Length: 391
Ligand SMILES: Cc1ncc(COP(=O)(O)O)c(C=O)c1O
Image 1 (cartoon, rainbow, N blue to C red):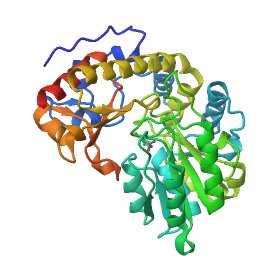
Image 2 (tube, protein in one colour):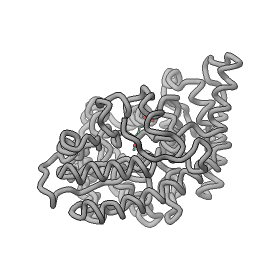
Image 3 (cartoon, rainbow, N blue to C red):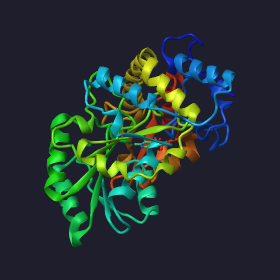
Image 4 (cartoon, protein in one colour):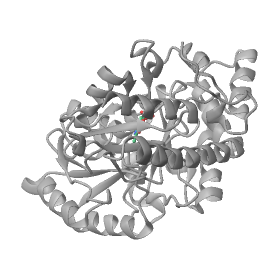
């Protein structure tokens, strides 16, 4: 196994704590989807140990045998405090939240409340591939509203998509990804207020997937959609799963805006059967006590963003990269290098490095690939070296 430098188990930056050898012992999809010689920087899992407070909460629960069904509103209360402290959002009302098993299940359940089969869901492509998969699986139509050249929401394109979505009397949802996966775009208050106004004008409901909300660079500010004027009929989906790497401990929260409370009340009780009690315990501890760990992670991600820019400039100057300020994902444009529609396939075969392919992210995805920055600087450096050697 190749030696890649890493920090010590007590390095303050959680991204430097684990060796490649330790990571390869993991059994999650990031580490098992490809053969051992491939360096995986594709799916949104992070190469970090659990935050101390989260690990303690889970091991305490296991020691106690506290492994039954979840109860109460502790998760929502922890998120509300976190939202108030971090983002100044003081109106997350616990009584307008519902526990769901994960964010995509939450999206599906909200779509069932406010659309019918054949109705439209507008997305800003290129976007997180499962938006297409889940929406189409439940018989709704995707209507694309491409991001602009700077990877920002294009109000003209969005309005055009809203018109197409509601044509023929259909109900429509705008599934907003905030911050945006894969570009890392952090939407501003002005952009979100414009979205809310546009949606109201066309009778489109907004569902904001805000799973990456805590993962925003210190140079930017995350704005919760429901905190924006005019967003009262919207929904938000949040979870600690991305920021604290808890996808295997299932839990997430749907929050309805004040004018969407009646819709949320129609969500059937059986939906609450999905989230795991251990997941709820872990996520609650993350929001309540995981702030210092998160800050250390954000510092490490900022370092990795700068490192990636420097590595690309040195080894792969033909790759265009518009660094985003949110998420731990980087969206790379390989079109100038002539690698065809799916550069990730070429890099996997020739370079033994796995990125997420661009084409399944919809229009604008061809010629691109998504790289996961949430790894050690050593692995990131080796990945770019392999990519350059492959070309
Ligand atoms: C934008 C976005 N939404 C949803 C998810 C999946 O979340 P969950 O596992 O809670 O369904 C991801 C995972 O990477 C994501 O990036």
